[in-house]
Image (cartoon, rainbow, N blue to C red; front, side, top):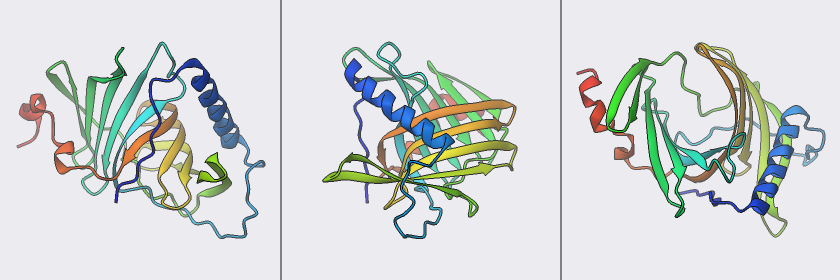
Length: 224
């Protein structure tokens, strides 16, 4: 079954202002959950994001009218594969591919493809698991949309301190199916610093096998 969350990428200034307000609300959520509803009488358990999905991810720290860039993410937990395609929004509203990062977490190798060439480097940390740890802290509930046509959202906070990762994560997911909506990560992953705030859009679980094919220009660098 396909699940889609769709938000237009070519946003006029007034819509960007609304999006900025939503981002501010999420950042406040990351700090304090006092304003969220925890009184629904339900027992909330950490959930699992889809094991396999594709989404267009917007960095809310940098996306603007003058910097319309996003990343198409494809994840397959069973195969331990993640592909990140850096895209720029063209003047006609289309998406142009600038670079592709193909991460193979089984073999701990990363292929970086751009303009027909490919290089490799080692992956320094483990792939993010789809399931939240049992120790995750429930932050509360909110919703997107209007009362008569809304999506209920749950907030969670947890840490990952293994596999060369030391990060804190705050994530908003749909209450019914644990579909990611927004995510905030801070800390270190390998030798790099992480400080990301992203919005998931156009998410689908209907992803074909060939979506995870290695770029042809990287074939000669792959292990036999």
